[in-house]
Length: 341
Image (cartoon, rainbow, N blue to C red; front, side, top):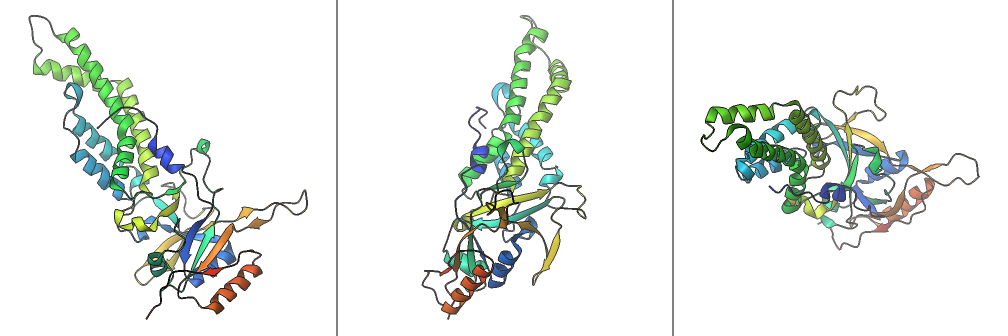
């Protein structure tokens, strides 16, 4: 595993420019609810359609360990150190799907995709709503745990990002080992005597038990944990690549009082389960019509498309509904030539 420093690819991925239009496929009922409430449901990550949600990062890290050389420079136990780091990182409550509360609102850059009409719009009779969400990413300086970025599907890209998340920790450990190995001959070796196994063990124990090394390791682990957490909600199985999903990842800190949240956890029923979700407001302030007045809030809808199964009457009704909510968007019907038979 290379330890050469480089531009942070995780930051680059997480701060890609947000498209002017991001789409959300839903049923007619979902369309009505989003527009009427000005909010969208963000679903508990454990209940999304990818069964590997939020555990995919651990699998990728484990695969990385298996492919890592056993020893690095000066016989540094590279694989063992990496395995210890991954085990420690994934002990975090933030990365334990049974302890963390991670909610996800899903969008896509695909504006008229048949597979998503079929999957999310109740048999192609639903609606896809486009939003301008460029104001919804927290600024870099806020160091917020909230992430708004595209999902990662390609295996080589996921591998590179996981490697980078662990790189600082490995670099710290490797450099400390190198320093020790260079010092060792001066402290224990002579021209007439070769250090024995007990001397080697004593020296390395002293090095790695020192307070400054422990502090460096904790900093490295903390950085790696933070990076892995940012990635965990974005890594998806390659089978879902056609969805071109963008995610607004909304974590609730483990141990938080979930009875006193700004956006309380609610539940909706499906055929299989009760699904936890939060209602996340999508409204943004608009320019006030009268100077000095507080700005009104508006839903940043900038396009609406009805599914291939929608009728002309459905398009007209959607137009009237949008106008009743002061949304000046003319809905249109999908161009996909699909008919259910």
